[in-house]
Amino acid sequence: SQQGEEDPQALSIQEGENATMNCSYKTSINNLQWYRQNSGRGLVHLILIRSNEREKHSGRLRVTLDTSKKSSSLLITASRAADTASYFCATDAIYDSWGKLQFGAGTQVVVTP
Amino acid sequence: DVKVTQSSRYLVKRTGEKVFLECVQDMDHENMFWYRQDPGLGLRLIYFSYDVKMKEKGDIPEGYSVSREKKERFSLILESASTNQTSMYLCASSPSGTGNQPQHFGDGTRLSIL
Image 1 (tube, rainbow over the protein chains, first blue to last red):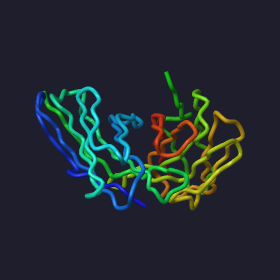
Image 2 (image 1 turned 90 degrees about the vertical axis):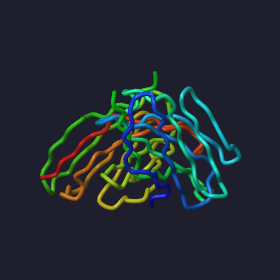
Image 3 (image 1 turned 180 degrees about the vertical axis):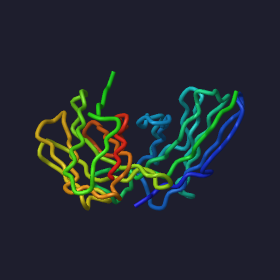
């Protein structure tokens, strides 16, 4: 079952602009992760935020988590052409003893020079 | 650097064939996963394994089986391939533990069933 849903489905911006994408999920979670996927490649882990955290930074990435709204956002600041990729959120639900990840359908980001 | 290697990037098979997809990781990870990725559906978990010879069904196990005889290798088997199994297949691994560990992915196998 698909737990996370990203919004928007697609985003087109110019280099230097910020890119923001959102993830909503349905059930209570332990952790939320964001991944990037370049065309034709596997997913690469970007950042993990725990359910008791509200914000986390890693380089040009900023992730927020609002467990009351069951939503998260990923902000990429000062975007570059190399940021062109699909971005996925993944959650592990509290009820799942195995801690399996449920992925959303992704946001496709295109950064033009 | 961590590495998950999938044996083929592209594969074309015929309906009814038995298909093997292989995945090897060099990180001594306990957990290994097989996903399929289809446009608009994201990644869906087929099977995962938390130890050698151990396996658990994911969300869409029908038509698939898996084998994990060695810690570093996790194989996905399509018992009798069908056209609706045409997809991108991704293998991943992670250390022991639950969802608080990042998963490391291979580059995927794009499988076409004719």
